Image (cartoon, rainbow, N blue to C red; front, side, top):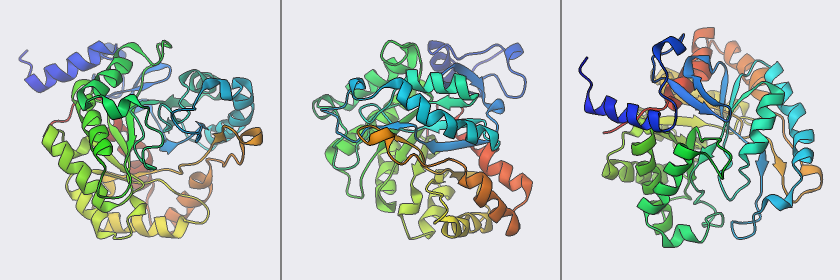
Length: 343
């Protein structure tokens, strides 16, 4: 059987990470349609109802002071586990845990919570460049994009911090436009990492102009727009830009759904439906989390608004079950299946 160069690259990346499964191991998806959870590879077709941007453990102290000595794992489990069980009982099967390195990422905690809650949980590689680069480690300023990408690729191949737990996506971020030199470099490193691993980039984005700058960097590196999720697209108030981005094959994520934002997010989803672009939309709460440094972890917000309030609102406004499944089942599978996406 003849194999294309693109398929060879995809297979090489998946094989390096232990992800290339035999056809007999896959029941509902093609052999390469897998995602990487904290418990290993999962057939993307088994992700079920998925929330693509949530948090469990976050530390806002800054990259130069962050440390696992600042919290007790059992305290985190005690606070987070009931929230995650509530989420599982609401019908959710998979969540993406979006706190990156130097901002609270702890794959061991996530694995324990996955095991005890029954949820599929994905963690990430990459660095967070927003908030004036407060959460970037010192070496992110001195190393090249290629050197940073090599660090992230190594996590995909070998696991994070000696745990053997591998990332399932790339998390990075920028402020509003114009992007700083460091933020540009972080995006370039993420793009290079994608070309070696096939991991999708989840990019926290300050506004629409920043999203366009990001796309220019991806184009320069040779990455297709479908490899990037425009996270926090709701930060941009010009709703025409959602449509423009989706038509360029970007994923547009409205991930600030809460009891106070239901109507505005309904309007955004209605707009995308009217433009026949519902197949480019991702939705989540950006909720949680155990806040290191605050007594008892602070105000840990639940993950159930979408299930208990937003989906009923969608149904009241004419969304079919098929369309809801598109948003919460089909789209996450397509967005995050590990595949190299070149321009």
